[in-house]
Image (tube, rainbow, N blue to C red):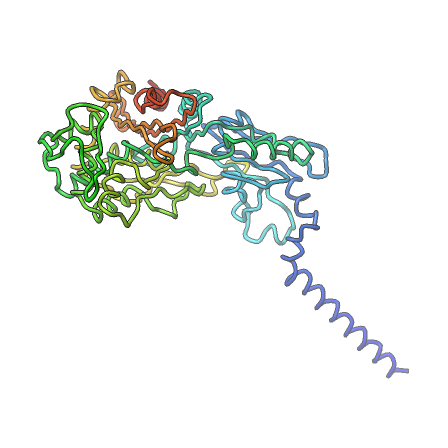
Length: 485
């Protein structure tokens, strides 16, 4: 009898070990596959069982959560949704997340381990942290000024604090209300189809995800390269520049929109945007120095995050001489995001240093305890401080007496550069109007802002489009708002 008891006990022990091994297999080795299985409803139910953390602008939340009373309980809400959509993105129970809602999802959803009071606390207690807060660097007045300035036109604005890289405004129009993508009812799917089918692409963040030919605003880079390479040593000395300029090795002639560009000085050519002078300067500087200067300003950088991914701006590394001439005036294959062009303007205002742009000042717990912070970081030294000083003079001349007078602000020193970028097959597309600028308040040391504006106005008369006329007034409004003037 004792023998049978021992056998039964041994069998029970084997079964117990088998159960433990299987439980270990399921809960440890196969846990991820079960968690990620689309049929597992426990994850989304837990994810939406509590309010999501908020995105904060100047101490005020621009997001919220609404109790739907359904199984996926809390839905995302947005305050001034279209104004901040290029920053917040959306958080949808059907279509996932975008922009800051995606980049900072761990903090906002409460899943980031840094929100736990102790290491491995959540693993032991099986609890979920409340969603944290994402505090942005945005200036609400500058954001509003940019949004109202663009109005119903397609376009984008980026504004940066030159000394730190803080992004003060990031606007893209037309925009949309991210709240229509919250929840999981039929209306969400209808809104998704409508937004994706809209030819104006309201969900496209033109400020960081679309690249444009920068046109004459790129002449800031070409002028800096010419000064750095020693091709130009005196900005008031005549250049050996014909008008028109025949592109080397071709019969194609490049002309200007203004008079007086033949052998014009760099100051005059910059002030009145002489294509012939800058095309020849780019050729004289040479491909190596032009590509190096462009890279120092941030072109061809495929790793830039703010923390949103930024489309890389392009300056070709392999160009023949005619292509180099056109690229040096912001045409051919040269392309840039508005954020990149704001970085160029900020480098001039900041003594030649390119600061890494960033959108998140810090993240916190729901109670306000700091989880992480961001601060100034230098990406590149685009040019020597002496070159930056010369460029400040040239950009100031543009606003004081050149093509950018519409950006002048009483009580501030303003520098700028206009641009009207051609595009399309045979330049058949309606040109883009550009303006990049910086401003410093006369009575506030260190108070500065750098701005880039691009306007796509397909309804405008082609001959009436100009950076000084269409984009400069928007930049002016943003700079005034950022400086509090």
